[in-house]
Amino acid sequence: MKKSILTLCILALTVVSCNSKRENQVDALKNDSTEVAKPLSKADSIVNAAIEAHGGKRYNTADYSFEFRGKKYRFQNNENIYTYTSEIQTGDSLVKDILTSDKFERAINGQKQTLSKEDIAKYSEALNSVIYFATLPYKLQDASVNKMYIEEKTIKEKKYEVIKITFGEAGGGKDFDDEYMYWINKETRKIDYLAYSYKVNDGGVRFRAAFNSRVIDGITFQDYINYEAPVTTELKNLPQLYEQGKLKELSQILTEGVMKNNK
Image (cartoon, rainbow, N blue to C red):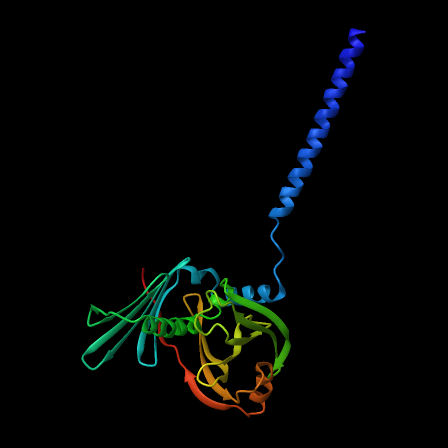
């Protein structure tokens, strides 16, 4: 009798233990499933490939200088921390702007200037914009960037993936409601064309064609011919107008004298 009772107790403990193990395994599977990363969208995958083709992880610690329209620029990246600077000599005054992850400063002949909030916003935006375009597509995976796959397009017998970019109001800057479109070469994964529309100053539409693409210490830099189109033009229609010669050349975006700085 005692043996029977003991046997039943052992069986009961075994069942409880097995059930407990099964419950733990189910809980573990649940936990594992919640930790699985969501698959990347097609737009994200294409943008990631473009970033890799243009420089990839080298951007994270990049330190380069260049000249643009008479100003000297420098960008220094340290993962999520950055320092952007510009310098220009105007008469007897050396004007230096410094934009970091958390503040903006302007100095004239080494003397820090007191600026209004409006001036800080204006000068910060101007400096950030130059670095942003010079380092495309590095910033296209920022949290404020919204990406949408549009279509596949052929321009001058080359195939492109077309990505539309908009920005969230938080972190998207003063002109967060601007719209951009990028034509990413399916073979090279690099940006050959881009376009954007903006609302300020009665609005405008621009189309840029890359040229003078060169790789400097692992990072691609490009110059662009900047074309103007009527304000009502849809961005996706610009390549056709470009091929037909119906866009007006407005300017050239030249990033000159690019050099990597020694740490």
